[in-house]
Length: 408
Ligand code: ZN
Image (cartoon, rainbow, N blue to C red):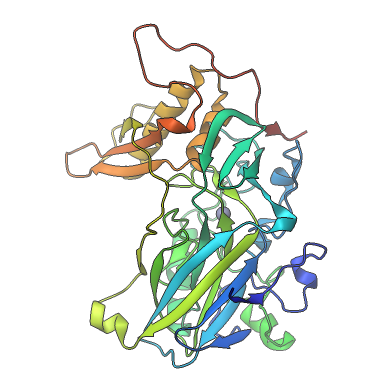
């Protein structure tokens, strides 16, 4: 069993931990542990909100969550010998829930606090809680579904260099300036007030917090990629930008559909990751790497049958034609799936949550057939305890009248 390199105490807020978590990316955040190539270690993490969301039947906590405090990350871990230009090879040897916190949650975030992919259709805060049964999950808020988890870190990556940090800050500031007051916002700019800079000394941390990256987007270093296939057994190759690399991780998901569409769209949880580290010296140049590359797990859940929903790049409200816009096409595919699932008795919010949390496959099926992009959403039919395939009789209500939690 790998030695635990970072442990979580659920009786304390992350801010009160002896070894501090960090919720920003910055090249000068000190390593909390050092390892050699070939070493293995266990990392515990808080859920992405640091415990702000409770296992109850109200979405008030989702409505009120302080998004400037996320994501709470464990690390950074240094690897002896890692230098800029190398690839850090990271094995996700195992992943799971912690006995003190064997449950998960999914939030639909309100337009005024986060938003989500279908925010125009689902503008209010909502929440579903999930119970874990060995490898399976069910929800009292979403009846009629059950599936095996595909546990993965939503967020994992190495510390950026100063140059990369400044480059991204510049391009993001330029985008933000195009519509600075948009709700939901175009992006999350640096925000010093609630920054946690790990073990950085106070004065240095206060200065660094003003330029440190927020953890919201994926960037060249990986970060918040929310790729469900980075599950236990996968192997990831991260570009190294600072001496030691500085690997950090968090935002563990029990399961997620491609796109993580409700924003907090996975089954979010605290948990552990067993990590192995190694190096490919000079690997960035050798393999022409800009963004991380990875090999998926050999033990992903296997489904024999899917029902697949198509969408094209035509706006659902205005009928406006978009040019090969995969964002619009994917939204239409998701909306088509939501409308279909409602015919079996689900509310729109329940259907939205199923698409965000189940191991749903999202694809860009066609991106050249002017003017329509074609995106697809493939739902594994075996997750339902009834038949969702179309037939001559038509759909009937299959789930009891129910809904996910609302805010008061
Ligand atoms: Zn997450």
